[in-house]
Length: 352
Ligand SMILES: O=C(O)CCC(=O)C(=O)O
Ligand SMILES: [Fe+2]
Image (cartoon, rainbow, N blue to C red; front, side, top):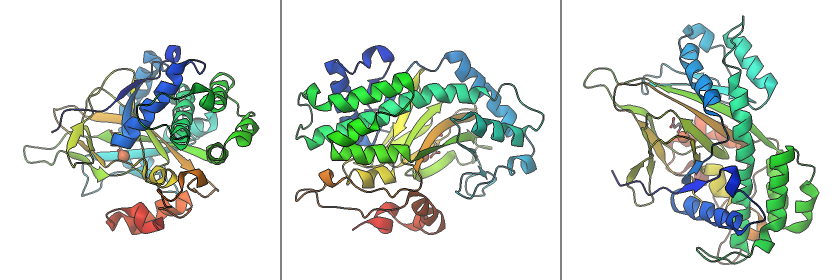
């Protein structure tokens, strides 16, 4: 196992000041980390510990429900309940649709606990703090892509003036929670226009994963096997157990060390296509060790009713277009049906 070289980037609100040069530096760090490993650790203390405890403490209750109740969580977009898979005996997961809305969490809670569950509602509180941050993180990535577009390479100092409009807008979102300022971006840069429309078409699913401990001495420790994510972006939180491993471009596995107030941000297949291959979704897996079961929650974003298209500005003679535009849900469906047999499903699906 290679030592962990993953970047830890501080997103706590004090350092997120769009007027300061530290914001532009953060954007650069994000780009570099994502270009290198497709993943980074985001320090963010905006989700209060009690809320997080409430969320994770309510998860055993969810998994202790009878199997026929768990199976009530079905979905036509492959985000229902998964469990009892002979090839993945340790793994179970739920997909909670629209988790950042009150209705989404309410609907799921009623389905699982018709007479209510007072604790589970904290999921929404937890996610609203996470969602604010996620807006910043994805905006930050868009800014980073844009910086590259201005010809500023790795490690160079970025002129903050160039990223001002985008940065200000994302901060406004952070404060007001609204996106009425989109036209500002649309006027400025082509890539921002495309990013904005993607952002408007973004929906979320909360993945709630449980990994049991391996059975007996010869039980396989594989919680979930090597895969790349099919969401547009993944933000993951786990509970101090460890076990997530990321494959580097050299083929080594890096263990992601659990740490408090941290989220793991993972690029994905659709993100690879959107950035014209600049940022690749990394292969990752979960290997269980020790005798504690493991829970994790992941905020997966998806693009609905709008094709994902590489921004024109990321295509030139040096960077010819690598992917055709595609529908995100059709790609997910393709993956579930046949793409999972391919070495690189996004290339097989829409590669040029
Ligand atoms: O639980 C984890 O740490 C990873 C989960 C994961 O990779 C996924 O759900 O796609
Ligand atoms: Fe994953």
